[in-house]
Image (tube, rainbow, N blue to C red):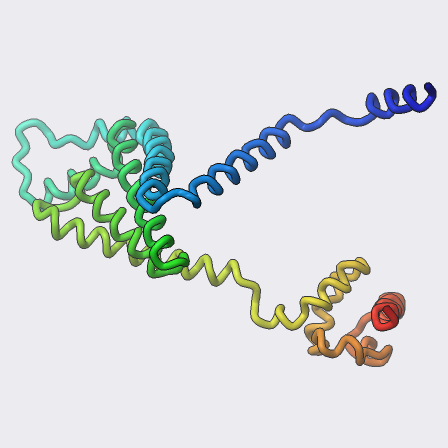
Length: 252
C-alpha cells in the first residue's frame, strides 16, 4: 500500500512529457518508416514519389517567396506604349521570373526542386552513391527546367536552358565540395580520437590543444610520463588524473 502511494507521489513530482519532443519523436518515426517503405519500391515508383514530395516542398517555399515579392513583381511591367528591344525584354522577363506572384513562384520552385529530387533519386539508385557528379547532374536538370518553365532569358529558350543548367550545376558542385570540406574533421584530428575521448571523460577537454601542441597522439598514450605532460604545460592535478586513467586502462 505504501509503495503504491509512493509511486503516486513520485509520478506527480515527475514533470510531464514535453509535447514538442513527443511530436518530434513521432515525426522522426513516421519519416523513418516512410524512407524504409520507399527504399523497397521499384525505381519508377521511388522516383515519382520523391519528385512529387520535392515539388510539393518547393511549391510551398515558392508561394511564400511569391507572397513576399508580389508587390515588386507588379511594378516590373513595361511602360504603356514602350517599344523595348529584345535584350531589354529578355532582362524584363528574367526579373519577372525571379519576382513573380505566389502562383508563379510556386510553379517555378515546384519544377526546380521536383526535378532536382527526382534526378538525384535516380542517380543514387543507378550509381549506388551520392557524390558531386550526381549532384551536378541533378542541378543541371533542375536549372534547365526552371529556365524553360519560367521563361527566363532570351528568345532562344533551348540555349538559355543549357546555359542555366550549367550555371546551376557549377553552383551546386561548388556548394557540395564546400559542404564536404566543412563537414569532415581535419585530418590531424583522426590521430587524437582516443585522446579526445579520455580527456572528455575526465572533464579535461580544454587540454586537448596541449596534446596537439606536443604531438602527443593516440599512439603515445601508453608511453606518457609526468615529465612529458609537464612539457606541454599541463598542471599537476590534471597530470595525475591522466596518468591514473592510463594506468587503470592498461590494467583492465
